[in-house]
Image (cartoon, rainbow, N blue to C red; front, top):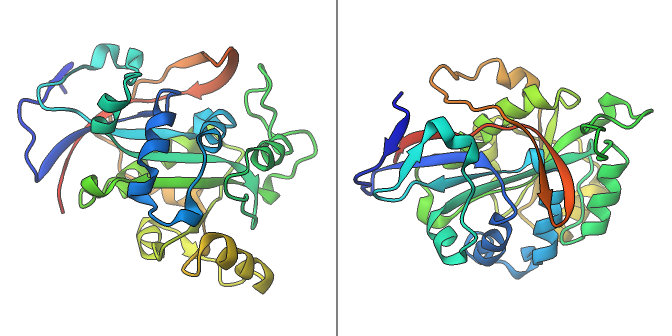
Length: 273
């Protein structure tokens, strides 16, 4: 693969995208465009909620962005790439995002509640500098999972299979960097369970009725809890043509230092289905 990717023309049937770790600059964009993705008012979340979902487990958060017409990506220095702080530029580029964090199996965090997510994650992993995100002493690996808090693709980018591309690539990465978790769970909303089923998630039909009622009340009538043993799924993924740039960093975010683990950034060209 060439070290320089220059997209001279992007047509409606083919685009080039960059899959990369989420950055603090992305949060305002994600907050601003959320109504495009989740029109229902009951799924609306505050800026602070999005920011917290990122800060609580940044190594589990990723974005996919459009490489604009004429934009040049230097893959030798791709690990230095950061999204713009300009909201209008980011709104043109950001196509989708992926939030994940540790959680208790069979449970789901409340919407728009930063404190609940912070408290829940702190019971599972050591988030201190040097802790490296390891399980807290006494936590049984069998009782915890990686919770896919949110994955979304903007309407303007649908049809390019980006949800599956982003999920498969990020899950493959996280399976290597987060060996403490071999299961992942999510709450499907707005009848999107068929999309998650195509990625490899199964509806948990054994979920107690009390929890089903909670989901219906808080996430909508078409919501359901889904899970996947992604350690098995990863074995089947084909990654022979992936461009990977691992980079071990500590990033200063809002005057605090957060452990990111090994990151990857890659350029891919995708065609519309």
